[in-house]
Image 1 (cartoon, one colour):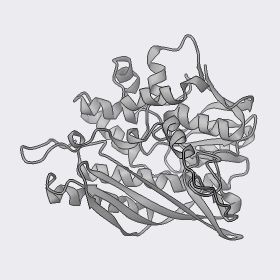
Image 2 (image 1 turned 120 degrees about the vertical axis):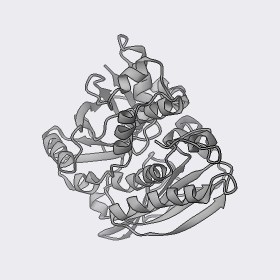
Image 3 (image 1 turned 180 degrees about the vertical axis):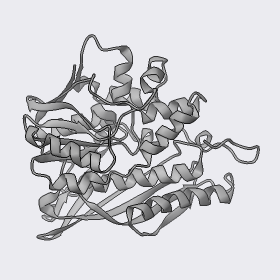
Image 4 (image 1 turned 45 degrees about the horizontal axis):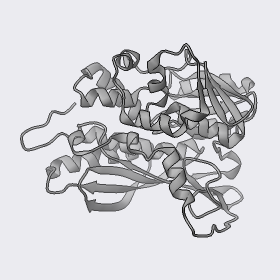
Length: 358
């Protein structure tokens, strides 16, 4: 946690939103994309794509283009305003979050480009350099070159990556491939958005901040190995739309109803207490307004459960849909990579594309 000085403003004070809470709400984004009058084109080798390809068939994490029978390119971009005040941590979190979309498709990152927008006359240049260094450190940890990028002078600090990876098309995992009876397994506990809201209010202690940084800089490395496991049918990562939003995308894309056991969902330390005290992000409310009509919450749920399940995650965990007989192998894979809190949180069944929470 970095304190501001008279000459150095807090990073979060320069942004109207932070992390994946900056995302445009899913309902609004769908409406914006639907307004395009440009006729869609057919690209037979575009295996996954939403903008200008074969239409927004699914809300997948990255575009995928087939090169040949055994190789496809996975491409994505992700950037946002600061979620923390420490510049090095901000860079690390943003880079981890961007690379996650490649892992979520079952891909292996091979290269990244930096996306940089900074108030160049407001922030000291050594602060900006630390943001870039944080991103570089994560790319180094992931074993990929940060090979270039683009920068602009902007009103708010913005940082992220274009991430490029590869995947064998037979191992590609969309969020629309789930099957009735599949178990839902979540790789990371929830609560990053609530932590960030508490940080802005000066109510996050050093221990919880350390927990937040550990969660948001932990690369979703199990993705490629999970994608190759027999019985794994669909995968995504839980980010700005919260657990309910990304589960709903999987349910809609697969034509199934998702049932979540609210008591089984893992949360970061002290998050339930913070939520109970009324700490929440504005994005949580926008998320619910966007998709709440397609979610059935149990009548006896505590009032804050909705905030927890719509809480925008930054660099959140993988959400895996797998056959029941594959669940142990999925959990073992997560554990090998250090994701000790990975757990089964529900299942999918025949029914309309909705989410039910009990």
